[in-house]
Structures are given as structure tokens and as C-alpha cells.
Image (cartoon, rainbow, N blue to C red):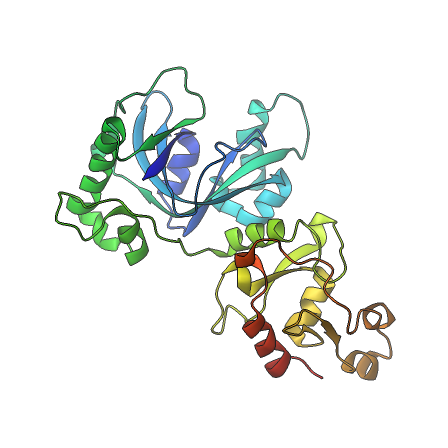
Length: 312
């Protein structure tokens, strides 16, 4: 199993270690991703900068994206590792090569972050060079990777705080095997609300599924089946919509059939004597559908929305 050890801002770590978030944004001042071969669920370990230089925790990789700094704050808030937008900006601006009030930053989305107590930090990772500025990929089947992974697994076996870990975290770190810690395995992490929004946005190529609108600040990730009910943050339960269509969709004034056709409710005309901008889309095919099979809107969930929410 491959895992990443990433050079981590100490202030980012210290802020998040005092909070209990289900996801975090491991940001970079550069829009260039940290790596190109990461799979969902891959462990991502935090290696602090001087004066510590220790591995002090980690999370589980979900994906990467780029966002304007202001939008990254809107999406993740304090999960960016700062108490306010201005504090967040103060962390990033000194690292930028050019001055820009709202620069594009790299975002690495991590689920289920965990933080190791300082007494158990892992020092001097093998094969680590002082010239590394972003991070390094390890393989748990190689000697250096197995040494690091054994220490991470040891922490979760013996640290009393491990009792607070949920089942997903434990399954991602340990397996039921007769060997000392078991053969490492990957599980699919559960998406949080912020990661859901980013991954749905990118799955639809940053365009509204109904209108094709590409103004990023007005695009929102809508749940097909509401999360407050029996819905989930799975990408296939999401669809990217312009903000007004998102509200109409949630109210049942627009819907999408299982064959990806847009439906507009007559209630818009009956209640507000308006809606020409919406009715021209009635019975039209979606403008944008994700390429990846796992990201396409789930047809059964769309049918549920059309039958149970849509005001036809």
C-alpha cells in the first residue's frame, strides 16, 4: 500500500489538532497538485516543519482541486486550519510568488484527520532527505515504508485515544490478519459536506448541469436525496446547479428524470406568473453530465426526487 508523507505547516497542524473535524483542506500556495497517482482512501501523513520534523498525524486522501482563496474559505472555513479568512490569508500570502488578493490555491481534500500526541510523534522517517519541500510517497511493502507504517499502526493499537476513533479510521489503518499489524488495506472514506461540494463541482467541469453556467461563485452542489433525510454525500447523490436552480430543485419546482431530462413545475407560472427563463429548459436534456461513471447522478435517486419532491 502506498501512502504520502507531506511537509505540514506547524500552525495549520496546531490549530486543527485542537478541533474535531471530519475533513480538512491541506492547502498549498501552488495550484500544482502534490502528487498525481493518489487513490481515494490513501493515507496521508503530516510531517511537521522545524523545529519538530516529526510525523504527527494524518488523514485519508479524497482528491485534489484548485480554488480561489476566498472560495476555499467559503467551502472549508476553519477546516483550512485558521480561525478567520484574514488569518487564512496571512498564512498563504507570504508563500505566494506574486501579490494577488484572491489567488488560486491548491487543495488536497482529506477525510478523518487524526492527530498523534506529542509524546508519540514519529521522528526521523527513514529515507527522508532534507531537500524535500512538499512530501514523499512511501510503500508499506518496502523496508522504509513498513517502518513508518508499523509505528503509525502501533499508535492506534496502544494509544488510549484510539478508542475514540470511528470504525472507518480503524479499518483504514489496520486489518484483521494474523501478522503483527495486518496487511494494510484501503477503504473508501466517507465524504464530508465541504469535500462533497468540491468533488461534485469538478465532476461537472465547473458548469451547471442544467444551464451550462460556469461562473464558479454561483455554482452549488445540490443533494438529489436530501442529506438531512436518508441522503449521503456520495458524488452520485450530487448535481452541480446554479444557485437559483438549486433552490428550485430543493423546493421541487424543477426536477430531473431518470433519463436525464429537465422538468419544470407549472407551479412557477401559477404562483408567480413568471418563469420564462426556466420553462425554456423544460424537457431538455441536461447540458453537463460527468464523464466518470461513479460521478454520474444516480438514476434511482433522480426518480425518487421526481416522484416524491417534484411539484408536477
